[in-house]
Figure (cartoon, one colour):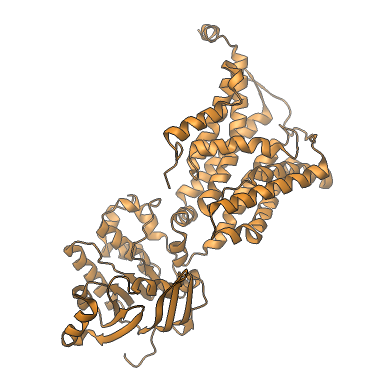
Length: 297
Length: 236
């Protein structure tokens, strides 16, 4: 029966499930990165163009901890998001917070400029050919219909867990109710006695930490290289536009969903696999400009 | 009671929105346990006075002392923490929060606030609709919610900005009963009102505001004697 379906589709099950897995992996990175962008945009009203560079710094952070301090992958998984998140907090305090009273555009220009500077610094120091990072979970398991490498399974699993935990924190906890309220009306939340500027700082640090976590997860899969972020971030911005700017569940579902759609496109019509996300973006923008899960502002 | 130092004491309060100078030296005070209104026509600066007390106008000068502490240079979150609860004119119910989340949002700033049970006893509708989205409530219920959420915090002074605006008479009566109840509990209220009839049923004293400054002041018991003067100010 299965054979018949695959014959009918004209693809082998290995190819289909292989691409589905790659789609899920890519989707995991889209989801983690667009989630960070959504959290930052919701609270700070800043389109964080430095996000790709911060993801790249996460990957480099893992590499540097290993090569200079001998700290392995599992240590980096905890330490790097904290370190890069702290770097984000510094950026917010020193630079971004000075722009809140201006138009969105200034925050975007600042973060875009910062991304170029950071990438330039890493390229100068480490070149652009890429550095290898060993897979901490070699091997895998034969599932019958496909081979699942342990590490790839781990990336999908941890991404789903982190995304859902973030969603739960924002939608279901007291802290999250402060975040949601401050997204709507920061002036009033502050007039209730809540230190909103500090919340904004910590939110930026958290979003940046998510990008860095994605970077650490990516290090063993893709080579660690200064432009890895700018290659990915364009697609992630398309994901954010499709999901709806600022929507938490929207960025998670859209991230994974588009990864899978991209993977399936590789199976059935490989020529379109690089453009399918942008075609969907164009269609969504025409039909629902606020995105699939977004509310018009 | 008249001899005690005022809980809130504003002197020569000036405030600006951008370039526009809105308050021109407001001077007024509220003693502990009093209900005091700011009366005046639309656009004379009553709401701006509330916002200036709360520290959410761009620029303000003069002096606002609360319980003896000068607040003119403090950010609004620290002013709130001194013990002031703010209920804004537009009510400020959050659409992404349900009724209970809205109710629990403002953190306790002092001991002695009402428990959730007490708040629910005062406003039974809020218990029935606990899980509804905040902005799905009727206008009257949203107003109740906006008042209810600052009762939990233990704030000693409540700033209520036009709590009766646009509401049905029966709801206005209910809000009046709530304000009298709060006064009995020893809370202090600064109330902005355009509805003179309503103000007369709850307040101890009135200030009349015109062009961003206080132009008249009298006790509620002298209201009848001053009616003509007052109606000239309010243009009713």
